[in-house]
Image 1 (cartoon, rainbow, N blue to C red):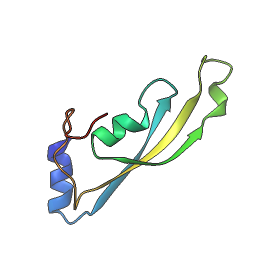
Image 2 (cartoon, helix red, strand yellow):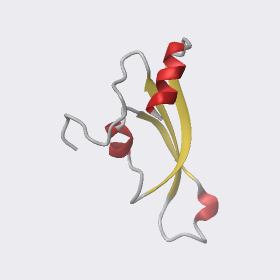
Image 3 (cartoon, rainbow, N blue to C red):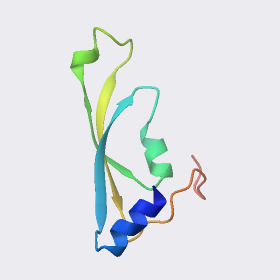
Length: 79
C-alpha cells in the first residue's frame, strides 16, 4: 500500500479517502491513526442488527499524502 500511495503522490494527488466496514471491537479509530489516516465519519449500518451481535459501521477515512510518513504498523506515538 505504501508503494501505491507514493505513486498517487508522484502523480499529483494530495489526499486519498476510502470507506471501510468496521466493528465495535475491530478496526477502531486508533488503528487507522496508526497508519496515518483520520476517521472523518462513522455511521452505523443497521441492516446487520438482526445478524451480528455487535454494532457494524461504515467508516470514512482520509490520508493527507503531502504530510504522510510511510505506512508502518509501528509509530512513534503511543497507542
